Structures are given as structure tokens and as C-alpha cells.
Image (cartoon, rainbow, N blue to C red; front, side, top):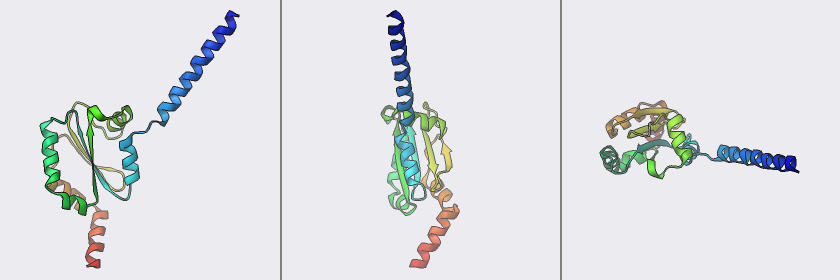
Length: 150
């Protein structure tokens, strides 16, 4: 009888462990999903901040707000990643895939091909952002096509 209880208890623990492992594997970062869904469609700027009161974060938001037409013209999608609003999966994705440290403000530009083009820990001026994007071969092709259609 004791042996049966022991086997049942350990079997239950083993199955619970498998369930948790499986559930964790299924948990995908919302940021990662957005990046994957935007591949070949959008250039994505992830703006990470440990606090929405960060001076760098506020400055970056002002910079971006002043250039909405330039952002739209370049097919930009802005993702605000505030530490206290992120899931564990989002934090893991930012740390492991985008190399963002949780203690620092960070801006990460992801190209339409899904590759990281810029990563920095200070606010990114739109002049630098747009120069980087406009230097990309895909963007140059977009500008040529737009010019032909005019």
C-alpha cells in the first residue's frame, strides 16, 4: 500500500513537471510574436525602459512623436517595452535575443529582414535612425519604386 502511494505521488509530480515544462515552452513573448509577424512588412523599433519615468525614455518618446510622418514613410512600428509591464517571456526575449540589459534604457532597431540594425543605450535621434534605414538596400528599393509611381 505504501509503495502504491509513493508511486502515485511521484507519478503525479512527474506529470506536473512535464506539464509545466510544456506550458513554459508554449509561452512565447508578445514582442517576439510582433517582430515575427512584422518580418518583411515593418521596421521595428523596440524602446525598452526599466521605468516610464526615465529621462532617456521620455526624451526618446518626444523625439519619435516629432517625426511621425518620417516613421510612417519608413514603415516603422514602435514597441514600448516597460519593464514592469513585461511578461517573463518578453523579458527573456529582450535579454537573450535582443541583448537588452534590464537595468538600462535601450533602443533596438530591427530591420524588415528580422535582423538587429541598431542597439544602443541612449536615445536615438531620428537623423541617425533615418540615415541608417535610408542606407538599407530594401529602403533604397522602396524609394525608387515610390519615385517611379509618381
